[in-house]
Length: 448
Ligand code: BG6
Image (cartoon, rainbow, N blue to C red; front, side, top):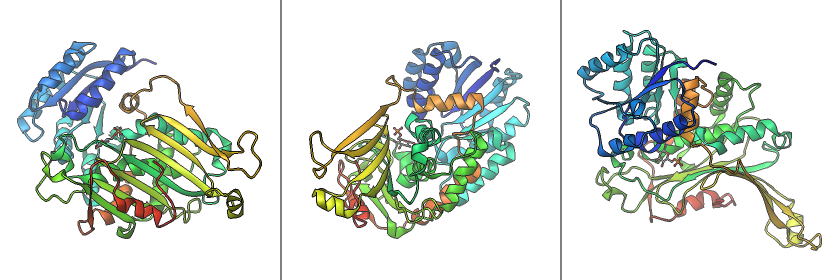
Protein backbone atom coordinates (compact mmCIF):
# COMPACT_ATOMS: atom_id res chain seq x y z
CA UNK A 1 0.00 0.00 0.00
CA UNK A 2 1.48 3.37 -1.05
CA UNK A 3 1.56 5.61 2.00
CA UNK A 4 0.21 9.05 1.34
CA UNK A 5 2.16 12.11 2.29
CA UNK A 6 0.99 13.94 5.40
CA UNK A 7 1.98 16.67 7.85
CA UNK A 8 1.02 16.92 11.48
CA UNK A 9 0.29 20.26 13.19
CA UNK A 10 0.29 20.03 16.96
CA UNK A 11 -1.48 22.97 18.60
CA UNK A 12 -0.09 23.18 22.09
CA UNK A 13 3.00 21.68 20.51
CA UNK A 14 5.42 22.57 23.29
CA UNK A 15 3.02 21.71 26.13
CA UNK A 16 2.93 18.85 28.60
CA UNK A 17 1.08 16.36 26.48
CA UNK A 18 3.17 17.03 23.38
CA UNK A 19 6.46 16.73 25.26
CA UNK A 20 5.64 13.81 27.50
CA UNK A 21 3.51 11.68 25.20
CA UNK A 22 3.17 12.79 21.58
CA UNK A 23 6.80 13.41 20.63
CA UNK A 24 8.13 10.27 22.32
CA UNK A 25 5.41 8.26 20.57
CA UNK A 26 6.15 9.88 17.22
CA UNK A 27 9.92 9.32 17.57
CA UNK A 28 9.37 5.71 18.44
CA UNK A 29 7.03 5.13 15.49
CA UNK A 30 9.38 6.95 13.15
CA UNK A 31 12.36 4.93 14.31
CA UNK A 32 10.43 1.73 13.71
CA UNK A 33 9.72 2.92 10.15
CA UNK A 34 6.02 3.30 10.77
CA UNK A 35 5.58 6.90 9.63
CA UNK A 36 6.57 6.44 6.04
CA UNK A 37 4.43 9.22 4.57
CA UNK A 38 5.40 11.82 7.17
CA UNK A 39 6.59 15.07 5.66
CA UNK A 40 6.84 17.25 8.78
CA UNK A 41 5.58 17.69 12.32
CA UNK A 42 4.94 21.35 13.19
CA UNK A 43 4.72 22.54 16.79
CA UNK A 44 2.44 25.52 17.25
CA UNK A 45 2.66 27.44 20.50
CA UNK A 46 3.07 30.92 21.91
CA UNK A 47 6.73 30.37 22.56
CA UNK A 48 9.46 27.86 21.99
CA UNK A 49 10.23 26.39 25.41
CA UNK A 50 13.66 25.17 26.50
CA UNK A 51 12.26 21.75 27.25
CA UNK A 52 10.78 21.48 23.79
CA UNK A 53 14.06 22.56 22.17
CA UNK A 54 15.92 19.98 24.17
CA UNK A 55 13.44 17.32 23.15
CA UNK A 56 13.60 18.03 19.41
CA UNK A 57 17.37 18.23 19.57
CA UNK A 58 17.23 14.50 20.36
CA UNK A 59 14.87 13.88 17.47
CA UNK A 60 15.65 11.00 15.10
CA UNK A 61 15.29 13.46 12.19
CA UNK A 62 15.41 17.22 12.99
CA UNK A 63 14.20 18.16 9.48
CA UNK A 64 10.94 16.49 10.25
CA UNK A 65 10.43 17.23 13.91
CA UNK A 66 12.13 20.52 14.65
CA UNK A 67 9.58 22.89 13.15
CA UNK A 68 8.32 25.58 15.44
CA UNK A 69 5.57 28.00 14.43
CA UNK A 70 4.77 30.83 16.77
CA UNK A 71 1.03 30.77 17.30
CA UNK A 72 -1.70 32.17 19.48
CA UNK A 73 -5.00 30.32 19.05
CA UNK A 74 -7.00 33.46 19.73
CA UNK A 75 -5.18 35.80 17.32
CA UNK A 76 -6.30 36.10 13.72
CA UNK A 77 -2.92 37.17 12.36
CA UNK A 78 -1.29 33.85 13.28
CA UNK A 79 -3.75 31.99 11.10
CA UNK A 80 -2.58 34.05 8.14
CA UNK A 81 0.97 32.92 8.84
CA UNK A 82 -0.23 29.34 9.13
CA UNK A 83 -1.97 29.67 5.76
CA UNK A 84 1.43 30.40 4.18
CA UNK A 85 2.80 27.14 5.53
CA UNK A 86 -0.26 25.20 4.37
CA UNK A 87 0.04 26.61 0.84
CA UNK A 88 3.31 24.75 0.45
CA UNK A 89 1.76 21.40 1.32
CA UNK A 90 -0.18 20.95 -1.87
CA UNK A 91 -2.01 17.63 -2.07
CA UNK A 92 -0.78 16.43 1.31
CA UNK A 93 -3.07 15.29 4.06
CA UNK A 94 -2.98 17.71 6.97
CA UNK A 95 -3.67 16.54 10.49
CA UNK A 96 -4.40 19.06 13.24
CA UNK A 97 -3.92 17.78 16.76
CA UNK A 98 -5.49 19.92 19.50
CA UNK A 99 -3.15 19.16 22.39
CA UNK A 100 -4.48 22.30 23.99
CA UNK A 101 -6.24 23.40 27.10
CA UNK A 102 -9.88 22.35 26.62
CA UNK A 103 -10.81 25.97 27.27
CA UNK A 104 -9.38 26.77 23.80
CA UNK A 105 -11.00 23.99 21.74
CA UNK A 106 -13.97 26.01 20.50
CA UNK A 107 -11.91 28.94 19.29
CA UNK A 108 -9.30 26.72 17.67
CA UNK A 109 -11.87 24.60 15.81
CA UNK A 110 -13.77 27.62 14.49
CA UNK A 111 -10.71 29.46 13.31
CA UNK A 112 -9.04 26.41 11.78
CA UNK A 113 -12.34 25.53 10.13
CA UNK A 114 -12.56 28.94 8.49
CA UNK A 115 -8.92 28.82 7.42
CA UNK A 116 -9.32 25.37 5.86
CA UNK A 117 -12.12 26.59 3.60
CA UNK A 118 -9.36 27.98 1.39
CA UNK A 119 -7.70 24.59 1.03
CA UNK A 120 -8.64 21.37 -0.68
CA UNK A 121 -6.15 19.14 1.14
CA UNK A 122 -7.56 16.02 2.78
CA UNK A 123 -7.70 16.82 6.50
CA UNK A 124 -8.20 15.32 9.92
CA UNK A 125 -8.69 16.94 13.29
CA UNK A 126 -7.78 15.25 16.56
CA UNK A 127 -9.47 16.57 19.69
CA UNK A 128 -8.16 15.71 23.14
CA UNK A 129 -10.31 15.31 26.21
CA UNK A 130 -12.27 16.55 28.05
CA UNK A 131 -14.56 17.12 25.10
CA UNK A 132 -16.74 19.87 26.59
CA UNK A 133 -17.50 20.52 30.24
CA UNK A 134 -21.06 19.22 30.35
CA UNK A 135 -23.70 17.99 27.93
CA UNK A 136 -24.60 21.44 26.59
CA UNK A 137 -21.01 22.48 25.86
CA UNK A 138 -20.17 19.08 24.34
CA UNK A 139 -23.08 19.28 21.92
CA UNK A 140 -22.07 22.81 21.04
CA UNK A 141 -18.55 21.60 20.34
CA UNK A 142 -19.95 18.83 18.16
CA UNK A 143 -22.02 21.36 16.26
CA UNK A 144 -19.03 23.61 15.66
CA UNK A 145 -16.94 20.65 14.51
CA UNK A 146 -19.67 19.53 12.14
CA UNK A 147 -19.89 23.02 10.64
CA UNK A 148 -16.37 22.63 9.27
CA UNK A 149 -15.56 18.92 9.28
CA UNK A 150 -17.39 15.71 8.48
CA UNK A 151 -17.51 13.08 11.21
CA UNK A 152 -15.04 10.87 9.26
CA UNK A 153 -12.40 13.61 9.64
CA UNK A 154 -12.87 13.93 13.42
CA UNK A 155 -10.82 11.91 15.91
CA UNK A 156 -11.94 12.41 19.52
CA UNK A 157 -9.08 10.74 21.29
CA UNK A 158 -9.14 8.82 24.59
CA UNK A 159 -5.68 7.45 25.25
CA UNK A 160 -6.95 4.67 27.53
CA UNK A 161 -8.28 2.97 24.40
CA UNK A 162 -4.74 2.83 23.07
CA UNK A 163 -3.66 0.70 26.02
CA UNK A 164 -2.95 -2.91 25.15
CA UNK A 165 -4.85 -4.28 28.13
CA UNK A 166 -7.95 -2.24 27.44
CA UNK A 167 -8.07 -3.46 23.85
CA UNK A 168 -7.59 -6.96 25.16
CA UNK A 169 -10.95 -6.85 26.94
CA UNK A 170 -12.71 -6.93 23.63
CA UNK A 171 -10.20 -9.35 22.09
CA UNK A 172 -10.57 -11.81 24.93
CA UNK A 173 -14.35 -11.70 24.61
CA UNK A 174 -14.27 -12.00 20.84
CA UNK A 175 -11.82 -14.85 20.59
CA UNK A 176 -12.67 -17.19 23.47
CA UNK A 177 -16.05 -18.86 23.63
CA UNK A 178 -15.53 -19.96 27.24
CA UNK A 179 -15.86 -16.40 28.51
CA UNK A 180 -18.79 -14.96 26.60
CA UNK A 181 -21.20 -17.46 28.13
CA UNK A 182 -20.51 -16.27 31.68
CA UNK A 183 -20.25 -12.56 30.81
CA UNK A 184 -23.63 -11.57 32.24
CA UNK A 185 -25.90 -11.14 35.26
CA UNK A 186 -26.24 -14.91 35.72
CA UNK A 187 -22.59 -15.31 36.67
CA UNK A 188 -21.13 -11.89 37.39
CA UNK A 189 -21.69 -10.56 40.90
CA UNK A 190 -20.27 -7.09 40.25
CA UNK A 191 -17.64 -5.22 38.26
CA UNK A 192 -14.96 -2.81 39.50
CA UNK A 193 -13.24 -0.24 37.31
CA UNK A 194 -10.41 1.56 39.00
CA UNK A 195 -7.91 4.15 37.76
CA UNK A 196 -6.26 5.53 40.86
CA UNK A 197 -2.98 7.44 41.01
CA UNK A 198 -0.45 8.20 43.71
CA UNK A 199 0.71 11.40 41.98
CA UNK A 200 -1.03 14.72 42.47
CA UNK A 201 -1.79 17.29 39.80
CA UNK A 202 1.91 17.88 39.04
CA UNK A 203 1.84 21.57 38.21
CA UNK A 204 -1.28 21.24 36.03
CA UNK A 205 -3.41 23.33 38.42
CA UNK A 206 -4.53 25.76 35.73
CA UNK A 207 -6.09 22.91 33.82
CA UNK A 208 -7.13 20.57 36.59
CA UNK A 209 -8.86 23.04 38.86
CA UNK A 210 -11.33 23.98 36.14
CA UNK A 211 -12.03 20.33 35.41
CA UNK A 212 -11.75 17.90 38.36
CA UNK A 213 -11.71 14.11 38.51
CA UNK A 214 -15.15 13.57 36.96
CA UNK A 215 -14.32 15.50 33.79
CA UNK A 216 -10.64 14.48 33.71
CA UNK A 217 -11.18 10.72 34.07
CA UNK A 218 -14.68 9.46 34.84
CA UNK A 219 -16.63 10.93 31.93
CA UNK A 220 -14.11 9.64 29.39
CA UNK A 221 -11.51 7.00 30.32
CA UNK A 222 -13.62 5.21 32.91
CA UNK A 223 -16.82 5.13 30.87
CA UNK A 224 -14.87 3.90 27.86
CA UNK A 225 -13.43 1.02 29.89
CA UNK A 226 -16.97 0.31 31.03
CA UNK A 227 -18.15 0.29 27.41
CA UNK A 228 -15.55 -2.21 26.29
CA UNK A 229 -16.34 -4.44 29.25
CA UNK A 230 -20.12 -4.37 29.02
CA UNK A 231 -21.04 -3.78 25.36
CA UNK A 232 -22.56 -6.42 23.13
CA UNK A 233 -20.11 -7.86 20.63
CA UNK A 234 -20.29 -6.33 17.17
CA UNK A 235 -21.00 -8.63 14.26
CA UNK A 236 -17.68 -7.70 12.66
CA UNK A 237 -14.68 -5.48 13.27
CA UNK A 238 -15.97 -2.37 11.59
CA UNK A 239 -15.38 1.00 13.28
CA UNK A 240 -18.99 2.13 12.94
CA UNK A 241 -20.38 -1.17 14.19
CA UNK A 242 -18.10 -1.12 17.23
CA UNK A 243 -19.17 2.42 18.00
CA UNK A 244 -22.83 1.54 17.43
CA UNK A 245 -22.54 -1.13 20.13
CA UNK A 246 -20.86 1.28 22.52
CA UNK A 247 -23.57 3.91 22.08
CA UNK A 248 -26.23 1.24 22.55
CA UNK A 249 -24.58 0.27 25.83
CA UNK A 250 -24.21 3.88 26.98
CA UNK A 251 -27.90 4.44 26.32
CA UNK A 252 -28.65 1.65 28.81
CA UNK A 253 -26.44 3.06 31.56
CA UNK A 254 -28.59 4.58 34.28
CA UNK A 255 -27.75 8.25 34.99
CA UNK A 256 -25.53 8.51 38.04
CA UNK A 257 -27.21 9.43 41.27
CA UNK A 258 -25.74 11.60 44.00
CA UNK A 259 -26.63 9.02 46.62
CA UNK A 260 -24.35 6.47 44.92
CA UNK A 261 -21.43 8.86 44.44
CA UNK A 262 -18.58 10.06 46.63
CA UNK A 263 -16.40 13.07 45.89
CA UNK A 264 -13.19 13.92 47.69
CA UNK A 265 -10.33 16.38 47.68
CA UNK A 266 -6.88 15.66 49.06
CA UNK A 267 -5.54 17.72 51.92
CA UNK A 268 -3.34 20.53 50.66
CA UNK A 269 -4.88 20.61 47.18
CA UNK A 270 -5.84 24.28 47.41
CA UNK A 271 -2.21 25.20 48.07
CA UNK A 272 -1.12 23.83 44.68
CA UNK A 273 -0.01 26.22 41.98
CA UNK A 274 -2.87 27.32 39.73
CA UNK A 275 -5.59 26.20 42.15
CA UNK A 276 -8.14 28.72 43.47
CA UNK A 277 -8.24 29.37 47.19
CA UNK A 278 -11.06 27.35 48.74
CA UNK A 279 -11.48 25.45 45.49
CA UNK A 280 -14.22 22.84 45.59
CA UNK A 281 -12.88 20.84 42.67
CA UNK A 282 -12.89 17.10 43.37
CA UNK A 283 -9.63 15.17 43.07
CA UNK A 284 -11.40 11.88 43.77
CA UNK A 285 -14.65 10.30 42.71
CA UNK A 286 -16.22 6.89 43.27
CA UNK A 287 -19.62 5.84 41.97
CA UNK A 288 -21.91 2.86 41.73
CA UNK A 289 -23.89 2.51 38.53
CA UNK A 290 -26.31 0.14 36.88
CA UNK A 291 -26.86 -0.88 33.30
CA UNK A 292 -30.51 -1.37 32.50
CA UNK A 293 -30.35 -4.04 29.84
CA UNK A 294 -30.94 -7.79 29.74
CA UNK A 295 -27.26 -8.70 30.11
CA UNK A 296 -26.49 -6.58 33.17
CA UNK A 297 -29.76 -6.04 35.01
CA UNK A 298 -29.07 -5.48 38.76
CA UNK A 299 -25.30 -6.05 38.48
CA UNK A 300 -23.55 -3.15 40.25
CA UNK A 301 -20.55 -1.52 38.57
CA UNK A 302 -18.23 0.37 40.93
CA UNK A 303 -15.94 3.00 39.42
CA UNK A 304 -13.23 4.88 41.28
CA UNK A 305 -10.56 7.36 40.22
CA UNK A 306 -8.47 10.09 41.80
CA UNK A 307 -5.15 11.70 42.62
CA UNK A 308 -2.81 11.31 45.62
CA UNK A 309 -4.25 7.96 46.58
CA UNK A 310 -2.53 4.91 48.01
CA UNK A 311 -0.96 3.75 44.72
CA UNK A 312 -1.08 3.79 40.93
CA UNK A 313 -3.49 1.15 39.67
CA UNK A 314 -5.62 0.95 36.54
CA UNK A 315 -7.71 -2.16 36.23
CA UNK A 316 -11.05 -3.70 35.51
CA UNK A 317 -12.19 -6.64 37.61
CA UNK A 318 -15.16 -8.89 36.97
CA UNK A 319 -16.07 -10.60 40.21
CA UNK A 320 -18.16 -13.73 39.82
CA UNK A 321 -20.88 -15.03 42.11
CA UNK A 322 -19.98 -16.86 45.30
CA UNK A 323 -20.04 -20.62 45.55
CA UNK A 324 -23.16 -21.77 47.42
CA UNK A 325 -22.96 -20.71 51.07
CA UNK A 326 -23.21 -24.27 52.36
CA UNK A 327 -19.86 -25.12 50.81
CA UNK A 328 -18.19 -21.99 52.03
CA UNK A 329 -19.37 -22.83 55.53
CA UNK A 330 -18.25 -26.41 55.27
CA UNK A 331 -14.83 -25.27 54.21
CA UNK A 332 -14.70 -22.73 56.98
CA UNK A 333 -13.32 -20.17 54.55
CA UNK A 334 -14.64 -16.90 53.30
CA UNK A 335 -16.99 -17.46 50.40
CA UNK A 336 -15.01 -17.87 47.21
CA UNK A 337 -15.41 -15.73 44.17
CA UNK A 338 -13.68 -16.13 40.84
CA UNK A 339 -12.30 -13.01 39.28
CA UNK A 340 -11.00 -11.87 35.94
CA UNK A 341 -8.74 -8.86 36.27
CA UNK A 342 -7.55 -6.76 33.34
CA UNK A 343 -4.69 -4.65 34.58
CA UNK A 344 -3.24 -1.79 32.53
CA UNK A 345 -0.99 -0.41 35.26
CA UNK A 346 1.36 -0.95 37.00
CA UNK A 347 1.56 -4.12 34.91
CA UNK A 348 -0.06 -5.12 31.64
CA UNK A 349 -1.77 -8.38 32.41
CA UNK A 350 -4.95 -10.35 32.48
CA UNK A 351 -5.27 -12.50 35.57
CA UNK A 352 -7.86 -15.15 36.22
CA UNK A 353 -8.32 -16.11 39.84
CA UNK A 354 -9.73 -19.50 40.62
CA UNK A 355 -9.77 -21.91 43.51
CA UNK A 356 -8.13 -25.31 43.61
CA UNK A 357 -7.72 -28.12 46.04
CA UNK A 358 -4.33 -27.80 47.74
CA UNK A 359 -1.89 -30.58 46.83
CA UNK A 360 -2.58 -33.62 48.97
CA UNK A 361 -5.44 -31.75 50.65
CA UNK A 362 -8.86 -33.21 51.14
CA UNK A 363 -11.95 -31.94 49.40
CA UNK A 364 -12.90 -29.84 52.38
CA UNK A 365 -9.59 -28.11 52.98
CA UNK A 366 -9.43 -24.44 52.14
CA UNK A 367 -8.79 -24.09 48.43
CA UNK A 368 -5.68 -22.34 47.19
CA UNK A 369 -6.07 -19.35 45.00
CA UNK A 370 -4.41 -19.78 41.64
CA UNK A 371 -3.79 -16.96 39.26
CA UNK A 372 -3.24 -17.41 35.57
CA UNK A 373 -1.39 -14.47 34.17
CA UNK A 374 -1.16 -13.69 30.54
CA UNK A 375 1.90 -11.63 30.07
CA UNK A 376 0.84 -10.36 26.76
CA UNK A 377 4.01 -10.47 24.71
CA UNK A 378 6.81 -10.56 27.23
CA UNK A 379 8.28 -7.56 25.41
CA UNK A 380 8.02 -3.86 26.00
CA UNK A 381 4.57 -2.91 24.77
CA UNK A 382 3.92 0.13 22.61
CA UNK A 383 2.65 3.20 24.43
CA UNK A 384 -1.05 3.99 24.12
CA UNK A 385 -0.35 7.08 22.04
CA UNK A 386 1.72 5.10 19.55
CA UNK A 387 -1.19 2.80 18.82
CA UNK A 388 -3.60 5.68 18.43
CA UNK A 389 -1.34 7.88 16.30
CA UNK A 390 -0.94 5.06 13.81
CA UNK A 391 -4.71 4.61 13.70
CA UNK A 392 -5.13 8.32 12.96
CA UNK A 393 -2.59 8.21 10.16
CA UNK A 394 -4.21 5.10 8.69
CA UNK A 395 -7.73 6.44 9.15
CA UNK A 396 -9.00 3.71 11.49
CA UNK A 397 -11.62 5.23 13.79
CA UNK A 398 -12.48 2.09 15.79
CA UNK A 399 -10.81 3.39 18.94
CA UNK A 400 -12.02 6.99 18.71
CA UNK A 401 -15.14 8.43 20.26
CA UNK A 402 -18.06 9.31 18.03
CA UNK A 403 -20.06 12.52 18.51
CA UNK A 404 -23.20 10.82 19.83
CA UNK A 405 -21.12 8.69 22.17
CA UNK A 406 -19.43 11.63 23.88
CA UNK A 407 -22.79 13.27 24.52
CA UNK A 408 -24.20 10.09 26.05
CA UNK A 409 -21.23 9.94 28.41
CA UNK A 410 -21.99 13.48 29.56
CA UNK A 411 -25.63 12.61 30.14
CA UNK A 412 -24.54 9.83 32.49
CA UNK A 413 -22.29 12.00 34.68
CA UNK A 414 -24.38 15.19 34.50
CA UNK A 415 -26.27 14.59 37.80
CA UNK A 416 -23.02 14.56 39.80
CA UNK A 417 -21.13 17.46 38.24
CA UNK A 418 -23.28 19.99 40.04
CA UNK A 419 -21.72 21.65 43.07
CA UNK A 420 -24.28 20.63 45.67
CA UNK A 421 -22.69 17.38 46.83
CA UNK A 422 -20.55 16.83 49.90
CA UNK A 423 -16.82 17.01 49.24
CA UNK A 424 -14.79 14.92 51.67
CA UNK A 425 -11.19 15.64 52.50
CA UNK A 426 -8.67 12.79 52.50
CA UNK A 427 -5.04 12.46 53.50
CA UNK A 428 -2.60 12.15 50.59
CA UNK A 429 -1.55 8.53 50.17
CA UNK A 430 -4.81 7.07 51.46
CA UNK A 431 -8.17 6.02 50.09
CA UNK A 432 -11.11 8.13 51.32
CA UNK A 433 -13.03 6.21 53.93
CA UNK A 434 -16.33 7.09 52.22
CA UNK A 435 -15.15 5.19 49.13
CA UNK A 436 -14.83 2.05 51.21
CA UNK A 437 -18.26 2.64 52.69
CA UNK A 438 -19.79 2.96 49.22
CA UNK A 439 -18.84 -0.60 48.35
CA UNK A 440 -18.79 -2.16 51.83
CA UNK A 441 -22.40 -1.33 52.48
CA UNK A 442 -23.17 -3.77 49.64
CA UNK A 443 -20.98 -6.43 51.30
CA UNK A 444 -18.09 -6.06 48.83
CA UNK A 445 -14.52 -4.74 48.98
CA UNK A 446 -12.28 -2.90 46.55
CA UNK A 447 -9.77 -5.20 44.90
CA UNK A 448 -6.57 -3.21 45.02
C1 BG6 B 1 -4.97 11.80 31.63
C2 BG6 B 1 -5.39 12.70 32.75
O1 BG6 B 1 -5.95 11.75 30.65
O2 BG6 B 1 -4.73 10.50 32.15
C3 BG6 B 1 -4.35 12.71 33.86
O3 BG6 B 1 -5.61 14.01 32.28
C4 BG6 B 1 -4.00 11.31 34.29
O4 BG6 B 1 -4.80 13.49 34.95
C5 BG6 B 1 -3.69 10.43 33.10
O5 BG6 B 1 -2.89 11.38 35.15
C6 BG6 B 1 -3.51 8.97 33.51
O6 BG6 B 1 -3.11 8.24 32.40
P1 BG6 B 1 -2.08 7.02 32.51
O7 BG6 B 1 -1.97 6.51 31.11
O8 BG6 B 1 -0.82 7.57 33.07
O9 BG6 B 1 -2.73 6.03 33.44
